[in-house]
Image (spheres, helix red, strand yellow):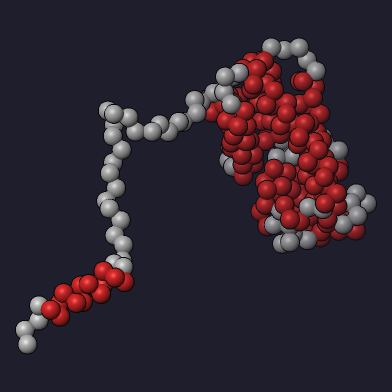
Amino acid sequence: MDKSDESQLPRRQQLLGIAGQMFSRQGFAGTGVDEIGEAAGITGPALYRHFANKQAILDALIVEGMQRLLKSIQGIALSEAEASKWLDQLIEVRLDFAFGPDRYAFVVRRNEQDKISKTALRKLAAMEEIYWADWLRVMAALRPSVPTTILRRAIYAVHVFMGYLALEEDLDDIGDVRAHIAAMVRAALFADPVETHPATADQPARKQPPRRTAPSKNARSAVSRSGRSGRKE
């Protein structure tokens, strides 16, 4: 989504996008309400018509962004697309989020975990449970022989990758770039798990050198006596 598209968003969502960008760059503690207002072209007091305080801005950024993402995902879940097409749509929706006005929510969510209110975290946890379940259901249908733990690991990994696209401001949301990213995400999701195998007869385990231990008290005494007995008078 480009700047002209973002200018058509509801004012509240525009403000959250600006705040999210500032929180991701300066941190929650290092960003003031007046700074957010100035960046948005309004006064600090005018910002309070939309949010009670800075905490409310942070909570809304995280919760409302997830609500919009989940709504898009559930729209896909209700369709009857086959699993492979469903996955393509899930990836596209997540890339819309990564390049859209809510793109900083992921970064702020990870960096400012301890600043988000408990109420917001509870709401977020409930929504994330549904969100991850939808992704896992699709991947389980596509890769039924792969353990759930491996699928979950792959899903989380590609989300970290897509989430941090928000920090790459030189990365434009254009067709070839977006298609390349989508292809990388798909490749990661379908990568075979790396297994470590025990040594075989053809590849014997490398012997470890014997562990050196300190001599026992009795051994030290025996050595001491031996030394004295061999000493010339």
